[in-house]
Length: 306
Image 1 (cartoon, rainbow, N blue to C red):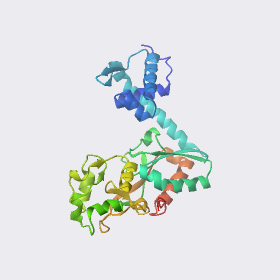
Image 2 (cartoon, helix red, strand yellow):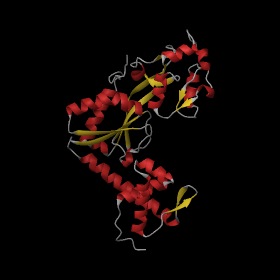
Image 3 (cartoon, rainbow, N blue to C red):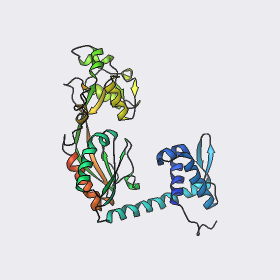
Image 4 (cartoon, rainbow, N blue to C red):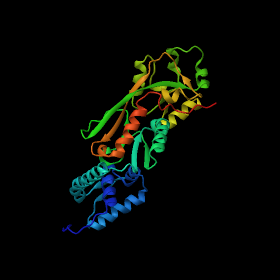
């Protein structure tokens, strides 16, 4: 087939690539943040442009046809090249005015970033900031964000990582919940407590056991990967949950559980792509984030309630 005169619509190409990675139109729609019918139309449009069939149905999912398998790696190469052009172009700009996209976990994005972004906008009103609050690690190589605040150091050689500090997190609960456990609580008393976990993996529980709490899987009847949901459950009195001290200590609706319990610690890393890091705008925003977030308590959360 002669494809020399085919003109690609990059939205169609992206829909094809993400659908191939995710295995269904519905999953691709969630990953792209668009409606499922839109993804289906974009893939169908690409198939019409090329005159081929790219997917076939397998159960409830989709599988690449032989033609789709032949094309997918070429499409990945094209997309990687396009993303690199975009990163390099962004890195060469000398203007401070324009957009910067920052991704961070829900808690950092909600409680720690707002005062920093407010200060940034006061100093540089021409900088437009998009904040993606996600506990997933977005791909900076694909320009899903310009700057990431992460709790782990990336391993990709093209990413530049700077450790800002170690965060301390403690266990918190509403006073009304703690009263159901009794007075003068000891660590053994928490064997009958309800904790709010992230998922069914055992990492969090084992970390608490290492601190001396006699917990089993039965102590985690409530699970949510959303930090906002977890914290709402803690404040409502549904159980015990973990939170960074800057947020937990400032919230008057909860109190620390077992004040002599050592903190759970995790690092805070500021990450950029080496190509984008050459942008004057991105460097300025990254430096302000490093300065403000690198000092414990500098972005103290204002979440106290009567």
